[in-house]
Image 1 (cartoon, helix red, strand yellow):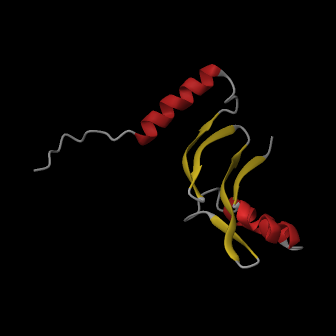
Image 2 (cartoon, rainbow, N blue to C red):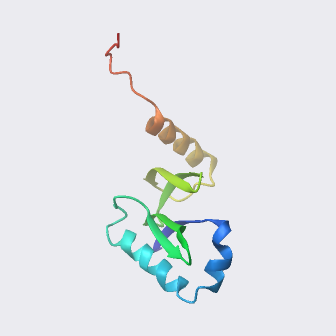
Length: 115
């Protein structure tokens, strides 16, 4: 099935992106940089265009057999987790994803008290 990549585009930079003849090569380089680490990278990869340092950000890459749950906002994105399975349109899988999301963001009580 191949791999999928999540990319965030800042709409304010669309004109610069449209007019940059090297944009395709820059985007591919950003995807390959993140992908070459198996998706494990110290952070997202910014793709500069024109006078913008981060108009396009490569957020993550994963195998098409997997699903990534990602929150996008504030010109950034957070990858909460990736999990095996790609049928995220099925209700049963959506339920499992919501359980995994709950586990990913729930603070576990360590039993320690603060005074």
